[in-house]
Image (cartoon, rainbow, N blue to C red; front, side, top):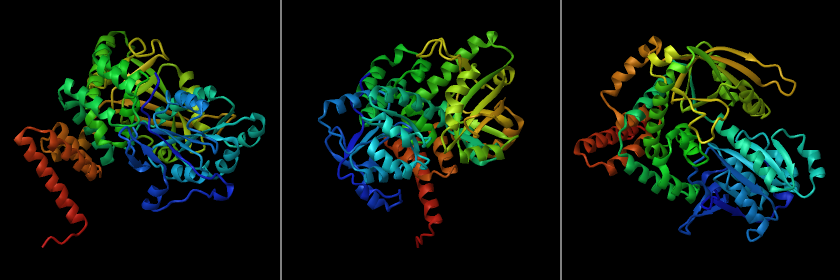
Amino acid sequence: MDKKQYSESTASGSSSPSTINKPKKSSSTTAAASLPTTTTSSNAVLPQTARRILQNFLLVWLDANLQEADNDFKNSLQHLRKIVASITTFTDAQQCVNFVSEIKKEKVFMIVSGSLGRQIVPEIEALPQLEAIYVFCGNQSVHEQWAKKISKVKGVYTKIEPICQALEIDRQRCDQAMIPISFNGRDALFMYTQLLKEALLEIEDDDVKSIKDLVEYCRLQNDVDEDEIKLVEREYRDHTPIWWYTAETFIYPMLNRGLRQMDVDIILKMGFFIRHLHQHITELHREQKASMPAKFQVFRGQGLSIEDFEKMKKTKGGLMSFNNFLSTSRNREISFNNFARPAALNTNSVGILFIMNIDTAICTKSSTSFAEVSKVGYYKDKEEEILFSTHAIFRIDRIEQIHDNHCDRLYEVNLTIVGNDNHELNTLTAHIRKDLGGRTGWSQLGFILIKVGEPAKAEQLYQILLAKTSSDEDRIEYNNQLDELMWNLIKSTHIDIN
Protein backbone atom coordinates (compact mmCIF):
# COMPACT_ATOMS: atom_id res chain seq x y z
CA MET A 1 0.00 0.00 0.00
CA ASP A 2 1.14 3.52 -0.78
CA LYS A 3 1.76 5.42 2.43
CA LYS A 4 0.81 9.11 2.08
CA GLN A 5 0.73 10.47 5.62
CA TYR A 6 4.28 9.91 6.80
CA SER A 7 6.21 12.47 8.82
CA GLU A 8 8.69 13.84 6.37
CA SER A 9 10.84 16.92 6.73
CA THR A 10 13.65 18.51 4.81
CA ALA A 11 16.56 20.50 6.19
CA SER A 12 18.45 22.53 3.64
CA GLY A 13 21.66 24.47 3.53
CA SER A 14 25.29 24.16 2.58
CA SER A 15 26.97 20.78 2.66
CA SER A 16 30.49 22.12 2.72
CA PRO A 17 32.94 19.69 4.34
CA SER A 18 34.13 22.48 6.60
CA THR A 19 30.78 22.46 8.38
CA ILE A 20 30.99 18.80 9.37
CA ASN A 21 31.90 18.19 13.00
CA LYS A 22 31.83 15.13 15.19
CA PRO A 23 28.49 14.49 16.93
CA LYS A 24 28.15 16.42 20.13
CA LYS A 25 25.51 16.98 22.73
CA SER A 26 23.87 20.37 22.84
CA SER A 27 21.41 22.04 25.14
CA SER A 28 17.79 21.17 24.53
CA THR A 29 17.07 24.71 23.33
CA THR A 30 19.91 24.72 20.83
CA ALA A 31 19.11 21.20 19.67
CA ALA A 32 15.47 22.03 19.04
CA ALA A 33 16.43 25.12 17.08
CA SER A 34 18.89 23.28 14.88
CA LEU A 35 16.64 20.33 14.08
CA PRO A 36 14.54 20.25 10.92
CA THR A 37 10.84 20.98 11.11
CA THR A 38 7.83 18.85 10.31
CA THR A 39 4.79 20.07 8.47
CA THR A 40 1.66 18.47 9.83
CA SER A 41 -1.66 17.97 8.04
CA SER A 42 -2.92 21.22 9.55
CA ASN A 43 0.03 23.09 8.02
CA ALA A 44 1.41 23.98 11.44
CA VAL A 45 5.17 23.84 11.75
CA LEU A 46 6.43 22.04 14.84
CA PRO A 47 9.94 21.40 16.11
CA GLN A 48 11.23 17.95 15.15
CA THR A 49 11.37 16.91 18.81
CA ALA A 50 7.56 17.26 19.07
CA ARG A 51 6.91 14.54 16.53
CA ARG A 52 5.13 11.37 17.57
CA ILE A 53 7.00 8.28 16.39
CA LEU A 54 4.95 5.09 16.34
CA GLN A 55 7.77 2.75 15.33
CA ASN A 56 11.06 1.82 16.97
CA PHE A 57 13.01 3.20 14.03
CA LEU A 58 13.15 6.03 11.51
CA LEU A 59 14.90 6.84 8.24
CA VAL A 60 17.12 9.80 7.41
CA TRP A 61 18.24 10.64 3.87
CA LEU A 62 21.21 12.95 3.34
CA ASP A 63 22.08 14.26 -0.12
CA ALA A 64 23.17 17.81 -0.99
CA ASN A 65 21.33 17.57 -4.31
CA LEU A 66 17.89 16.46 -3.11
CA GLN A 67 15.08 18.34 -4.86
CA GLU A 68 11.53 17.89 -3.55
CA ALA A 69 10.03 18.68 -6.96
CA ASP A 70 12.15 16.08 -8.75
CA ASN A 71 10.14 13.11 -10.03
CA ASP A 72 12.90 10.59 -9.25
CA PHE A 73 12.96 11.86 -5.65
CA LYS A 74 9.16 11.57 -5.38
CA ASN A 75 9.21 8.04 -6.78
CA SER A 76 11.98 7.02 -4.39
CA LEU A 77 9.98 8.34 -1.43
CA GLN A 78 6.96 6.32 -2.56
CA HIS A 79 9.06 3.15 -2.40
CA LEU A 80 10.57 4.01 0.98
CA ARG A 81 7.23 4.96 2.51
CA LYS A 82 6.06 1.39 2.12
CA ILE A 83 8.71 0.28 4.61
CA VAL A 84 9.49 3.03 7.14
CA ALA A 85 6.92 5.39 8.60
CA SER A 86 9.09 8.33 9.61
CA ILE A 87 11.36 9.81 6.93
CA THR A 88 13.47 12.95 7.37
CA THR A 89 15.53 14.35 4.49
CA PHE A 90 18.58 16.60 4.70
CA THR A 91 20.75 18.52 2.29
CA ASP A 92 22.97 19.84 5.08
CA ALA A 93 25.45 17.35 6.56
CA GLN A 94 25.87 19.04 9.94
CA GLN A 95 22.13 19.26 10.56
CA CYS A 96 21.86 15.58 9.73
CA VAL A 97 24.67 14.67 12.14
CA ASN A 98 23.10 16.76 14.91
CA PHE A 99 19.70 15.19 14.33
CA VAL A 100 20.97 11.60 14.40
CA SER A 101 23.09 12.33 17.48
CA GLU A 102 20.02 13.52 19.41
CA ILE A 103 18.01 10.34 18.76
CA LYS A 104 17.93 8.22 21.93
CA LYS A 105 14.93 5.89 21.87
CA GLU A 106 14.77 4.83 18.22
CA LYS A 107 17.09 3.13 15.78
CA VAL A 108 18.15 5.11 12.71
CA PHE A 109 18.51 3.88 9.14
CA MET A 110 20.46 6.23 6.88
CA ILE A 111 20.57 6.73 3.12
CA VAL A 112 23.50 8.94 2.16
CA SER A 113 25.07 10.12 -1.08
CA GLY A 114 28.52 8.79 -1.89
CA SER A 115 30.37 12.09 -1.49
CA LEU A 116 28.77 13.09 1.82
CA GLY A 117 28.88 9.51 3.07
CA ARG A 118 32.63 9.35 2.64
CA GLN A 119 32.92 12.48 4.80
CA ILE A 120 30.48 11.84 7.66
CA VAL A 121 30.03 8.07 7.98
CA PRO A 122 33.45 7.49 9.63
CA GLU A 123 32.49 10.17 12.17
CA ILE A 124 29.12 8.71 13.16
CA GLU A 125 29.39 4.96 12.56
CA ALA A 126 29.98 4.26 16.27
CA LEU A 127 26.67 5.82 17.34
CA PRO A 128 24.62 2.96 18.86
CA GLN A 129 21.36 4.39 17.52
CA LEU A 130 22.66 4.21 13.94
CA GLU A 131 21.50 0.79 12.76
CA ALA A 132 22.38 0.63 9.06
CA ILE A 133 23.71 2.81 6.23
CA TYR A 134 22.88 2.60 2.52
CA VAL A 135 25.11 4.54 0.12
CA PHE A 136 23.09 5.87 -2.85
CA CYS A 137 25.32 7.15 -5.64
CA GLY A 138 26.03 7.24 -9.36
CA ASN A 139 29.44 5.56 -9.24
CA GLN A 140 29.27 2.27 -7.37
CA SER A 141 32.87 1.13 -7.87
CA VAL A 142 34.38 4.37 -6.54
CA HIS A 143 32.40 4.44 -3.29
CA GLU A 144 32.65 0.72 -2.58
CA GLN A 145 36.34 1.30 -1.82
CA TRP A 146 35.66 3.23 1.39
CA ALA A 147 32.24 1.76 2.18
CA LYS A 148 33.42 -1.86 2.40
CA LYS A 149 35.60 -0.94 5.40
CA ILE A 150 32.57 0.08 7.50
CA SER A 151 30.42 -2.76 8.86
CA LYS A 152 27.24 -0.70 9.19
CA VAL A 153 27.24 0.09 5.47
CA LYS A 154 24.92 -2.53 3.99
CA GLY A 155 25.86 -1.77 0.41
CA VAL A 156 26.47 0.80 -2.31
CA TYR A 157 23.51 1.26 -4.64
CA THR A 158 22.66 3.12 -7.84
CA LYS A 159 18.90 2.42 -7.72
CA ILE A 160 16.29 2.81 -4.98
CA GLU A 161 14.66 -0.63 -5.40
CA PRO A 162 17.56 -2.70 -4.00
CA ILE A 163 17.88 -0.21 -1.14
CA CYS A 164 14.23 -0.85 -0.31
CA GLN A 165 14.80 -4.61 -0.40
CA ALA A 166 17.73 -4.35 2.01
CA LEU A 167 15.86 -1.87 4.21
CA GLU A 168 12.86 -4.19 4.51
CA ILE A 169 15.07 -7.03 5.76
CA ASP A 170 16.92 -4.77 8.20
CA ARG A 171 13.63 -3.30 9.46
CA GLN A 172 12.37 -6.78 10.34
CA ARG A 173 15.60 -7.58 12.16
CA CYS A 174 15.43 -4.29 14.02
CA ASP A 175 11.88 -4.97 15.21
CA GLN A 176 12.92 -8.48 16.26
CA ALA A 177 15.79 -7.12 18.34
CA MET A 178 13.80 -4.37 20.07
CA ILE A 179 11.38 -6.55 22.02
CA PRO A 180 11.59 -5.41 25.67
CA ILE A 181 13.30 -7.90 28.00
CA SER A 182 13.58 -7.95 31.80
CA PHE A 183 16.34 -9.85 33.59
CA ASN A 184 16.64 -11.21 37.13
CA GLY A 185 13.52 -12.63 38.74
CA ARG A 186 14.49 -11.15 42.10
CA ASP A 187 14.45 -7.60 40.77
CA ALA A 188 11.40 -5.49 41.68
CA LEU A 189 11.14 -4.11 38.15
CA PHE A 190 10.98 -7.67 36.81
CA MET A 191 8.11 -8.50 39.14
CA TYR A 192 6.15 -5.37 38.30
CA THR A 193 6.34 -6.15 34.59
CA GLN A 194 4.61 -9.45 35.35
CA LEU A 195 1.81 -7.60 37.14
CA LEU A 196 1.60 -5.22 34.19
CA LYS A 197 0.48 -8.16 32.05
CA GLU A 198 -2.33 -8.91 34.49
CA ALA A 199 -3.42 -5.27 34.51
CA LEU A 200 -3.61 -5.08 30.73
CA LEU A 201 -5.55 -8.32 30.38
CA GLU A 202 -8.06 -7.43 33.09
CA ILE A 203 -9.17 -4.19 31.43
CA GLU A 204 -12.60 -4.53 29.82
CA ASP A 205 -13.19 -1.60 27.48
CA ASP A 206 -15.96 -1.19 24.93
CA ASP A 207 -14.44 -2.76 21.82
CA VAL A 208 -16.40 -0.71 19.28
CA LYS A 209 -15.44 2.52 21.02
CA SER A 210 -11.84 1.33 21.45
CA ILE A 211 -11.42 0.69 17.73
CA LYS A 212 -12.90 4.11 16.98
CA ASP A 213 -10.54 5.75 19.51
CA LEU A 214 -7.52 3.99 17.98
CA VAL A 215 -8.48 5.11 14.48
CA GLU A 216 -9.00 8.71 15.60
CA TYR A 217 -5.70 8.71 17.48
CA CYS A 218 -3.79 7.38 14.47
CA ARG A 219 -5.30 10.04 12.21
CA LEU A 220 -3.76 12.69 14.46
CA GLN A 221 -0.29 11.24 13.94
CA ASN A 222 1.89 12.09 10.97
CA ASP A 223 3.47 8.65 10.77
CA VAL A 224 0.44 6.47 10.01
CA ASP A 225 -0.75 5.70 6.51
CA GLU A 226 -4.38 6.72 5.91
CA ASP A 227 -4.97 3.61 3.76
CA GLU A 228 -3.91 1.42 6.68
CA ILE A 229 -6.12 3.37 9.08
CA LYS A 230 -9.10 2.90 6.77
CA LEU A 231 -8.30 -0.81 6.50
CA VAL A 232 -8.44 -1.22 10.29
CA GLU A 233 -11.55 0.94 10.52
CA ARG A 234 -13.34 -1.02 7.81
CA GLU A 235 -12.10 -4.59 8.29
CA TYR A 236 -10.95 -5.07 11.89
CA ARG A 237 -13.75 -7.56 12.59
CA ASP A 238 -13.11 -9.43 9.33
CA HIS A 239 -9.71 -10.77 10.41
CA THR A 240 -8.29 -12.43 13.49
CA PRO A 241 -6.01 -10.60 15.95
CA ILE A 242 -3.09 -12.81 14.87
CA TRP A 243 -3.74 -11.81 11.25
CA TRP A 244 -3.52 -8.14 12.23
CA TYR A 245 -0.42 -8.76 14.38
CA THR A 246 1.46 -10.40 11.48
CA ALA A 247 0.14 -8.13 8.69
CA GLU A 248 2.17 -5.30 7.17
CA THR A 249 0.31 -2.50 8.94
CA PHE A 250 1.02 -0.08 11.78
CA ILE A 251 -0.42 -2.50 14.37
CA TYR A 252 2.72 -4.54 15.11
CA PRO A 253 5.33 -1.73 15.23
CA MET A 254 2.98 0.50 17.22
CA LEU A 255 2.30 -2.23 19.80
CA ASN A 256 6.00 -3.09 19.95
CA ARG A 257 6.93 0.52 20.64
CA GLY A 258 4.15 1.02 23.19
CA LEU A 259 5.25 -1.91 25.35
CA ARG A 260 8.96 -1.16 24.90
CA GLN A 261 8.71 2.50 25.88
CA MET A 262 5.77 2.06 28.29
CA ASP A 263 4.07 4.71 26.15
CA VAL A 264 0.84 5.52 27.99
CA ASP A 265 -0.91 6.93 24.93
CA ILE A 266 -0.24 3.83 22.84
CA ILE A 267 -1.04 1.37 25.63
CA LEU A 268 -4.34 3.15 26.30
CA LYS A 269 -5.29 3.04 22.64
CA MET A 270 -4.15 -0.56 22.06
CA GLY A 271 -5.28 -2.15 25.32
CA PHE A 272 -8.24 -3.78 23.57
CA PHE A 273 -5.96 -5.32 20.93
CA ILE A 274 -3.55 -6.69 23.55
CA ARG A 275 -6.53 -8.41 25.16
CA HIS A 276 -7.90 -9.69 21.82
CA LEU A 277 -4.53 -11.08 20.75
CA HIS A 278 -4.00 -12.84 24.08
CA GLN A 279 -7.48 -14.37 23.89
CA HIS A 280 -6.89 -15.58 20.33
CA ILE A 281 -3.59 -17.25 21.27
CA THR A 282 -5.27 -18.85 24.28
CA GLU A 283 -8.12 -20.22 22.13
CA LEU A 284 -5.71 -21.69 19.59
CA HIS A 285 -3.62 -23.15 22.42
CA ARG A 286 -6.66 -25.08 23.65
CA GLU A 287 -7.49 -26.29 20.14
CA GLN A 288 -3.92 -27.40 19.39
CA LYS A 289 -3.13 -28.87 22.79
CA ALA A 290 -3.79 -32.48 21.79
CA SER A 291 -1.55 -32.30 18.71
CA MET A 292 1.37 -30.56 20.43
CA PRO A 293 4.30 -32.72 21.62
CA ALA A 294 4.78 -32.87 25.38
CA LYS A 295 8.21 -31.27 25.08
CA PHE A 296 9.81 -29.48 22.16
CA GLN A 297 12.23 -26.72 21.18
CA VAL A 298 11.71 -23.43 19.41
CA PHE A 299 14.28 -20.88 18.26
CA ARG A 300 14.60 -17.14 18.11
CA GLY A 301 17.44 -15.18 16.57
CA GLN A 302 17.97 -11.52 17.41
CA GLY A 303 20.47 -8.90 18.40
CA LEU A 304 21.04 -7.76 21.98
CA SER A 305 22.75 -4.55 22.93
CA ILE A 306 26.10 -5.10 24.60
CA GLU A 307 24.61 -3.69 27.81
CA ASP A 308 21.70 -6.16 27.78
CA PHE A 309 24.04 -9.02 26.94
CA GLU A 310 26.11 -8.24 30.04
CA LYS A 311 22.91 -8.18 32.12
CA MET A 312 21.95 -11.56 30.73
CA LYS A 313 25.35 -13.07 31.58
CA LYS A 314 25.00 -11.84 35.16
CA THR A 315 21.52 -13.38 35.32
CA LYS A 316 22.67 -16.85 34.19
CA GLY A 317 20.72 -19.39 36.22
CA GLY A 318 18.08 -16.75 36.94
CA LEU A 319 14.95 -15.64 35.14
CA MET A 320 14.23 -13.42 32.16
CA SER A 321 10.96 -12.22 30.68
CA PHE A 322 10.07 -11.13 27.15
CA ASN A 323 7.72 -8.23 27.86
CA ASN A 324 5.76 -8.47 24.64
CA PHE A 325 4.18 -11.14 22.50
CA LEU A 326 7.03 -13.47 21.53
CA SER A 327 7.52 -14.79 18.02
CA THR A 328 9.62 -17.96 17.71
CA SER A 329 10.26 -20.57 15.03
CA ARG A 330 10.68 -24.33 14.88
CA ASN A 331 13.27 -23.72 12.16
CA ARG A 332 16.72 -23.23 13.65
CA GLU A 333 18.38 -22.26 10.37
CA ILE A 334 15.97 -19.40 9.66
CA SER A 335 16.44 -18.03 13.18
CA PHE A 336 20.22 -18.30 12.98
CA ASN A 337 20.93 -17.18 9.41
CA ASN A 338 18.25 -14.50 9.06
CA PHE A 339 18.47 -12.89 12.50
CA ALA A 340 21.26 -14.03 14.87
CA ARG A 341 24.24 -13.96 12.50
CA PRO A 342 23.40 -10.61 10.82
CA ALA A 343 22.94 -9.00 14.26
CA ALA A 344 26.46 -10.07 15.23
CA LEU A 345 27.89 -8.03 12.36
CA ASN A 346 26.63 -4.82 13.97
CA THR A 347 29.40 -3.37 16.12
CA ASN A 348 26.88 -2.22 18.75
CA SER A 349 25.15 -5.56 19.29
CA VAL A 350 25.66 -9.24 20.03
CA GLY A 351 24.03 -11.90 17.86
CA ILE A 352 21.91 -14.27 19.95
CA LEU A 353 20.33 -17.59 19.03
CA PHE A 354 17.83 -18.42 21.77
CA ILE A 355 17.09 -22.15 22.07
CA MET A 356 13.89 -22.40 24.10
CA ASN A 357 12.89 -25.66 25.76
CA ILE A 358 9.12 -25.86 26.10
CA ASP A 359 7.22 -28.18 28.44
CA THR A 360 3.52 -28.05 27.52
CA ALA A 361 2.48 -29.34 30.95
CA ILE A 362 4.13 -26.35 32.64
CA CYS A 363 2.54 -23.97 30.14
CA THR A 364 -0.92 -25.45 30.63
CA LYS A 365 -0.68 -25.47 34.43
CA SER A 366 0.43 -21.84 34.56
CA SER A 367 -1.75 -20.54 31.70
CA THR A 368 1.28 -19.60 29.62
CA SER A 369 -0.38 -19.61 26.22
CA PHE A 370 1.30 -20.24 22.89
CA ALA A 371 0.06 -21.34 19.48
CA GLU A 372 1.24 -22.46 16.06
CA VAL A 373 0.13 -19.53 13.90
CA SER A 374 1.49 -20.22 10.41
CA LYS A 375 -2.00 -21.24 9.23
CA VAL A 376 -3.80 -18.19 10.61
CA GLY A 377 -1.29 -15.37 10.17
CA TYR A 378 -1.10 -12.85 7.36
CA TYR A 379 1.63 -14.90 5.69
CA LYS A 380 0.43 -18.48 5.42
CA ASP A 381 2.91 -21.30 6.08
CA LYS A 382 5.69 -18.89 7.02
CA GLU A 383 8.70 -20.20 8.97
CA GLU A 384 6.76 -22.58 11.26
CA GLU A 385 6.01 -19.78 13.69
CA ILE A 386 5.05 -20.36 17.34
CA LEU A 387 3.65 -17.23 19.00
CA PHE A 388 3.65 -16.88 22.80
CA SER A 389 1.38 -14.53 24.67
CA THR A 390 2.92 -11.56 26.38
CA HIS A 391 5.48 -11.72 29.22
CA ALA A 392 6.64 -15.33 28.84
CA ILE A 393 9.21 -16.23 31.52
CA PHE A 394 12.31 -18.38 30.99
CA ARG A 395 15.23 -19.60 33.07
CA ILE A 396 18.66 -18.92 31.57
CA ASP A 397 20.37 -22.32 31.59
CA ARG A 398 23.46 -21.89 29.45
CA ILE A 399 25.29 -19.23 27.42
CA GLU A 400 27.89 -20.47 24.93
CA GLN A 401 29.82 -18.70 22.20
CA ILE A 402 29.24 -19.88 18.64
CA HIS A 403 32.48 -20.07 16.70
CA ASP A 404 32.03 -18.26 13.40
CA ASN A 405 34.48 -17.22 10.72
CA HIS A 406 32.80 -13.84 10.23
CA CYS A 407 32.48 -12.47 13.79
CA ASP A 408 33.20 -13.17 17.45
CA ARG A 409 29.98 -11.77 18.96
CA LEU A 410 27.67 -14.70 18.30
CA TYR A 411 26.16 -16.71 21.17
CA GLU A 412 23.76 -19.59 21.76
CA VAL A 413 21.54 -19.14 24.82
CA ASN A 414 19.59 -22.09 26.18
CA LEU A 415 16.35 -21.21 27.97
CA THR A 416 13.68 -23.26 29.73
CA ILE A 417 10.09 -22.10 30.03
CA VAL A 418 9.04 -21.28 33.60
CA GLY A 419 5.37 -21.13 34.55
CA ASN A 420 3.94 -18.08 36.25
CA ASP A 421 2.85 -20.37 39.08
CA ASN A 422 6.51 -20.97 39.89
CA HIS A 423 7.01 -21.01 43.68
CA GLU A 424 9.95 -18.61 43.52
CA LEU A 425 7.93 -16.13 41.47
CA ASN A 426 4.87 -16.37 43.69
CA THR A 427 6.93 -15.78 46.82
CA LEU A 428 8.54 -12.72 45.29
CA THR A 429 5.26 -11.22 44.08
CA ALA A 430 3.25 -11.87 47.25
CA HIS A 431 4.30 -8.68 49.04
CA ILE A 432 3.96 -6.64 45.85
CA ARG A 433 0.37 -7.80 45.44
CA LYS A 434 -0.35 -6.58 48.96
CA ASP A 435 0.84 -3.13 47.93
CA LEU A 436 -1.72 -3.09 45.11
CA GLY A 437 -4.47 -2.92 47.71
CA GLY A 438 -7.11 -4.45 45.47
CA ARG A 439 -6.42 -2.16 42.51
CA THR A 440 -7.26 -3.63 39.12
CA GLY A 441 -7.22 -2.62 35.47
CA TRP A 442 -6.14 0.92 34.62
CA SER A 443 -5.74 1.85 38.29
CA GLN A 444 -3.34 -1.07 38.74
CA LEU A 445 -1.43 0.04 35.65
CA GLY A 446 -1.02 3.54 37.09
CA PHE A 447 0.22 2.11 40.39
CA ILE A 448 2.76 -0.07 38.56
CA LEU A 449 4.03 2.92 36.57
CA ILE A 450 4.72 4.73 39.83
CA LYS A 451 6.53 1.73 41.29
CA VAL A 452 8.81 1.27 38.26
CA GLY A 453 9.90 4.92 38.44
CA GLU A 454 7.60 6.46 35.83
CA PRO A 455 5.56 9.01 37.84
CA ALA A 456 5.15 11.36 34.86
CA LYS A 457 3.60 8.55 32.81
CA ALA A 458 1.37 7.61 35.74
CA GLU A 459 0.19 11.21 36.02
CA GLN A 460 -0.50 11.31 32.29
CA LEU A 461 -2.53 8.10 32.58
CA TYR A 462 -4.61 9.36 35.51
CA GLN A 463 -5.27 12.69 33.78
CA ILE A 464 -6.52 10.88 30.67
CA LEU A 465 -8.65 8.50 32.72
CA LEU A 466 -10.05 11.38 34.75
CA ALA A 467 -11.12 13.21 31.60
CA LYS A 468 -12.93 10.21 30.11
CA THR A 469 -14.59 8.64 33.18
CA SER A 470 -18.26 9.11 34.03
CA SER A 471 -18.03 7.29 37.36
CA ASP A 472 -17.86 9.33 40.57
CA GLU A 473 -16.08 6.43 42.27
CA ASP A 474 -13.39 6.31 39.58
CA ARG A 475 -13.08 10.10 39.63
CA ILE A 476 -12.35 10.02 43.37
CA GLU A 477 -9.80 7.21 42.88
CA TYR A 478 -7.93 9.04 40.10
CA ASN A 479 -7.91 12.35 41.98
CA ASN A 480 -6.54 10.58 45.05
CA GLN A 481 -3.76 9.06 42.96
CA LEU A 482 -2.93 12.45 41.44
CA ASP A 483 -2.83 14.02 44.92
CA GLU A 484 -0.48 11.27 46.08
CA LEU A 485 1.75 11.80 43.06
CA MET A 486 1.94 15.53 43.77
CA TRP A 487 2.71 14.93 47.45
CA ASN A 488 5.51 12.50 46.56
CA LEU A 489 6.91 15.07 44.12
CA ILE A 490 6.87 17.74 46.83
CA LYS A 491 8.66 15.42 49.26
CA SER A 492 11.26 14.34 46.70
CA THR A 493 12.11 17.92 45.75
CA HIS A 494 12.02 19.13 49.38
CA ILE A 495 9.54 21.90 48.60
CA ASP A 496 8.50 23.81 51.72
CA ILE A 497 4.68 23.95 51.68
CA ASN A 498 4.34 25.91 54.93
